Length: 289
Length: 276
Image 1: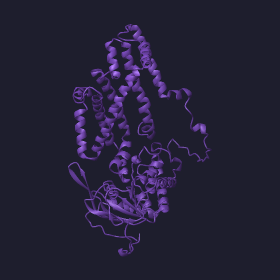
Image 2 (image 1 turned 60 degrees about the horizontal axis):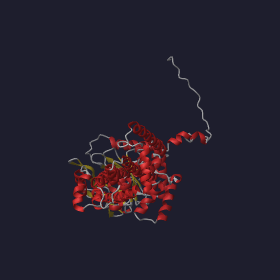
Image 3 (image 1 turned 60 degrees about the vertical axis):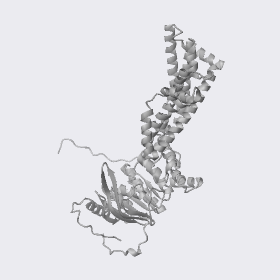
Image 4 (image 1 turned 90 degrees about the horizontal axis):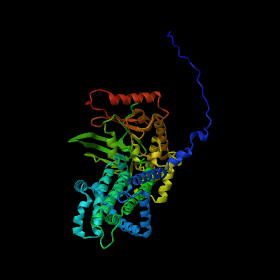
């Protein structure tokens, strides 16, 4: 006999009462729920950044170089009240949306072709490799030569800045669609455009959305830079022109106000546009965290 | 098992699905690999037919060829006498992978979408049939849930409901329960048998589990690997879920095991035997 005896205990069965609901699920505590509001978290960060800006600007004490937050805010409000900033913004956004829409459509057509045919695929790979590294602004002289001093030139460079990154992202997304999902789609009898729209596009939506975001940012950059370079045609300049003009007149607070407006519009589009789109699609479907 | 005389082929009905001398190949780098070599099998209406074999025997490849994703290099696959040309909604596949459900559709949308996509039903008909099939697989409560909120077993149930709703000529299942835990797998086999009794579907089922083959199948084709060839066809009508563990079941399982793994001279001709 070994020294250790494993005790033999009686078996038992028990009937479990249904668990009390509060034990299975409970709400987060109040501060936890508050912290989940990303708008609140971001707003807090913005306030801290503005505070830091104010402190640094006051410490520098040179309003020609660094106007304070309060001065900038006043310039912004005045500009908006006076209507000049609003008009500039309207012009910029109008051109921006045109270029963006054309760029997005062109990217979808190009990637659609790349999915369907090998030639289209080679075309996409070659074109993106050639043109994606080319800064849109470098095409501006050429655009001015072709389309003259006006909106058409701006739209041209905007399309260039949106098309390639979006096409790359979309195609990468299509390539990443799981084989099983593709087979399931073909099993339904889907093919061609219906297959792309019903299976590939929703499945690749996380990549497409990120491409749309990158394209949006690139378009803004290009637009402001282009307006800074060639300014206004017949007094119809956008935000970039507003910034350049005020710099020439050493109205630094206005320059800051113009920049702040560009940033604010960017934030608004990001949080109202893209985040809503993400919440309604990829987050809801669980294809993106 | 008692050997009964060959049944005259004349008396057999026309098979729903005919796999006739089919060879399948795939490209691997610069070489062409033969995955399936001259396989002939007949599946009859209402039959649950199992392809059983070790990995590398080409059973999944064969199933994909029946689904229309792969074209045979020789031989033909016929459905009700007509050769198969490409994937189609008359052969719906339940895959092993959980990502077969489009994640952007709810359970209900997932089940009704193929009906709409293939224009087999109107919107109201599709909804009605989808709800019925979701009910059949016991997911009525989750009709509006998105797939990422479901467990693996529930996702497979949705895939099965989707396939049932289409009322395909042949239901194709590619190791549908292989990625599930043992307990869930058992319950799913049980449900599949029940659905089979209820709806009387014709099933081609791929598995590498001897036990599963005996439980699920009416008839089992054993495939040998590299390349896939038919080693034997056996009957398993007698075995349901309750039969597992019984003496006859054990001996049938042992027999399959021997057929699959014996190291006898593989060139020895396999006697063609048919069991009633």
